[in-house]
Image (tube, rainbow, N blue to C red; front, side):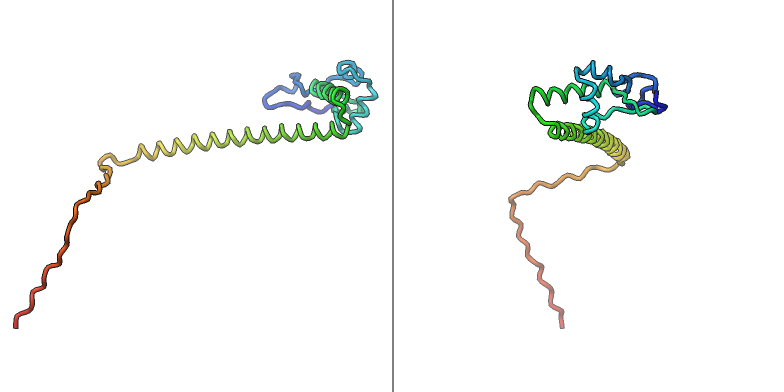
Length: 157
C-alpha cells in the first residue's frame, strides 16, 4: 500500500475495509464505474473525484469514489449537466453533509446540556427544606373597607 493509514470512521480498526478504504486501481475502478480510465484521470484533474495516492503516485479508488464516479456519469449523460455544474453539485452536497453532521453534533450537545440541567434541577428540588410551607396567594375579594384615621387628642392646658 502507500504507507498511510486508510481513512477511517471513528472506532474502526485500520485493517477493516470501509466504503472509504482506497483499494481499487484505476483499471478496476474504470471497469466498476463503466468509464474509460482516461475519463477517470480527467475527473481527477478537474477535482470531481479525487482518489487517494500510493507512495508511487498511483491512484487508489474507494467504494465511495466508485459511487461518485457513477453519479458524475449519470448527471453528465442522463441529466445533461456540464462538468463545472457537476463539480458545484458535488461541492454543495459535501457542504450539506458537513452541515448535517454539525447539526447532529450540536443536537447531541444540546441534548446532553438539557439532561444535565434536568439533573441539576432535580438536585435543587431534592434539597428543598421540608419544614417550609409554600406560600399561597390570598384571593381578591370585592369587599369594601373604609379607613378613617383616629382623631388625635388635643393636649390639655
